[in-house]
Length: 175
Image 1 (tube, one colour):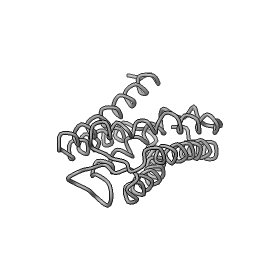
Image 2 (cartoon, one colour):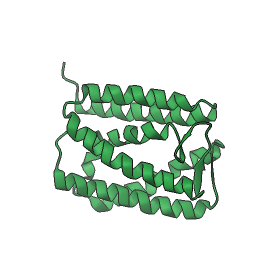
Image 3 (cartoon, rainbow, N blue to C red):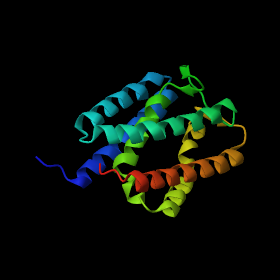
Image 4 (cartoon, rainbow, N blue to C red):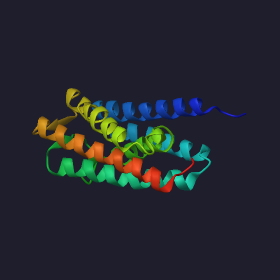
């Protein structure tokens, strides 16, 4: 049975949102492992059904490292800190799986950004930073300077997505 491209995209978007919700609300309910476990299940299943595993793994690994490092710096500097009972380094345990889960979107959803670095910058800098503030609303995160953090996030995410667009143009993976 052949699954359509749009069905796969819907599945990946839905699964990432489920992981994100379980990470956030698991932490909100003092269960840091919940999002981590759901994310592990998703990543396992994602790579189980993925045809070009190496290319997908490479994108997920490279961009997860950048993202995890960025979030760690924000936490280390106390600019944006997610409170948790289970911290690894400077971040809750579920960040270890949230980043690779997000990067599955880079592999299968955001490929339309290939050769579109300006659009990639705009999408990254406008759409992603507000999602961080859901943690503040739920009282699982805090920021010492929301304006500064928002500017830093806009710059990081715009640059992150632009690097992704350039990476795709350079390696041109057909996933």
